[in-house]
Length: 122
Image 1 (cartoon, rainbow, N blue to C red):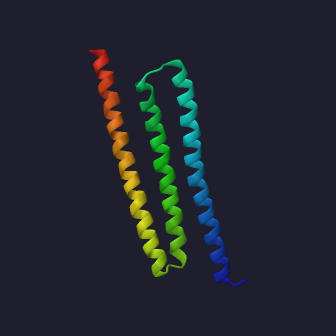
Image 2: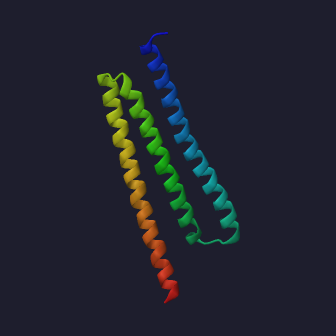
Image 3: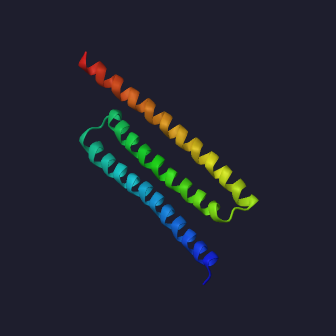
């Protein structure tokens, strides 16, 4: 096996590991949110219960998407063709937009939670 083939094998392994890490983060976040939803939802039947759960799930999704984007960058880094670069640009744009929306919604939810907590105190 020559050096070029060894690098390709290493690249495939690295991409697979990073993709698995991203999928695992999203899976764990979804399971955690589902468990919290069942536990908290059975204790209190209020819409306010969902906000912290959604915030937590949003963080997991954002982190998982970052791992997936890193895998796409790794995949393209060793043997970029024009098609791969165009595909990476499209994927990066979509994932960046998703991350932007998730972060904006997370920040909005945090503000609403903060405002609701302030209203109760006064």
